[in-house]
Amino acid sequence: MIAHVVLFRARRDLPLDARTALARAFEAALREIPSIRRANVGGRLRQGHSYEALMKIDYEYAAVLEFDDAAGLNAYLEHPAHQQLASQFYQAFEQALMYDFELREGEAGVAALLA
Image (cartoon, rainbow, N blue to C red; front, side):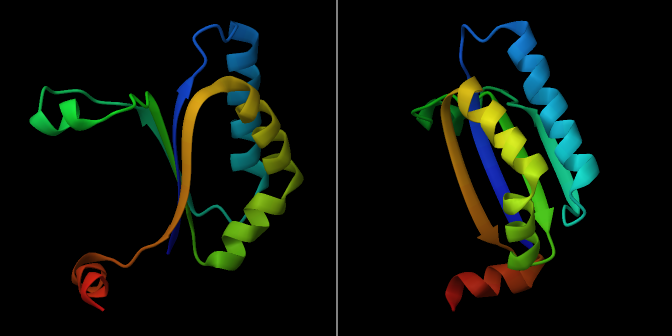
């Protein structure tokens, strides 16, 4: 499984209409791009654990999209709905990280760390 992980902090001066346009573009991508197997989006949870103080940048939001394989990820990235989402996103964030990971479940994933 391929996970497309996006951590981001929105611009402080981002107007409501731009936030709305970003959300609508994301909803359209989720509806229109068939290679997306699962998508989770949410805000950062803070509970006062010591590791939270180690974070140098406070990313407020995360989006994790899952694909069966690299071909599915590439189909997503090349899709016109993603192009519209990216256009809105690049105007909206102050800080962002975007990474792609090949993940294996459970012990198989842990074993891959040792390979």
